[in-house]
Image (cartoon, rainbow, N blue to C red; front, side, top):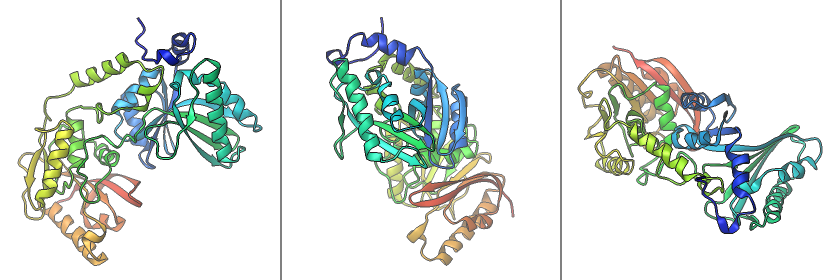
Length: 404
């Protein structure tokens, strides 16, 4: 029996047959959107998941596979922001190419009857003009297709509407791509961080720093300035081989072609292969009791109640945790919390001296808000990437701590 979840009262004739033919039988092209700089890490994730034709591009990673691959990418990707389904990729000669191509999309497979639709348009030296008119054409094509099949047409999502179906049109020179967002809320919003603390590191960037450092949960890890615990929690999820967000809802679950049994199988399989505890301790330390309370609450929501070792400690006076050298990850304070430029430089110098004194031989992953701090930390660089964060451009660096 077909386990497609649909809306029978609004389904057109032969909808299940169309779903099989248009959604589940063929392979599809997808695109994982990332913050600039994270494309190679996301490509490595997709390759490890067994997806096909993985190709890092500016702003994300193209890949291919059956529709189950889209479910898998949403379940497991740590460094991506969204996963898009490519509906049409076509050459633009004249304006008429847009409505003709939009009308050929089997919208009844991807949009539920009466769905609120938000169309985002991005043009760069494109043959297409007038973003508002483009959005109107996409909405008109989808609505006409659904109405012709006896399905309630789509409507334009009013400003501020919650969870609309989102179509993205990108025009570049003589080509255009129509894509459908499968993720809904941005993937970095895992759902656990309800106590964010001051200036928290975004979850996808925290995971990216860990991946940049080659962290796989097979060594001790210390976050000595944990704040809200994002780095430690992302490390805990990776160490226990848990997906980052299995409990949240995704946009693809509202599609007429959604197969609940397929998704539930993937989630069940993920839980079955997870480890009961990290192989090595994950230490989250902070000087502030309030920060540790936030970390504890966030870790509990992430299902990591007993997976982190929480300790109130001042990094500059505390000893390293017991055991062999491992990975230390640091998201240091920045901006007004450090005072003047001179005070910020003094803080970075203290950080470097402490690392060299007590952590020689450890790998260190650090978020640098001022690139000149690198020379003060005493690291032998291994890898780095530059990414946007909170209106800033930050350097994420992994290196080996040199001894004095």
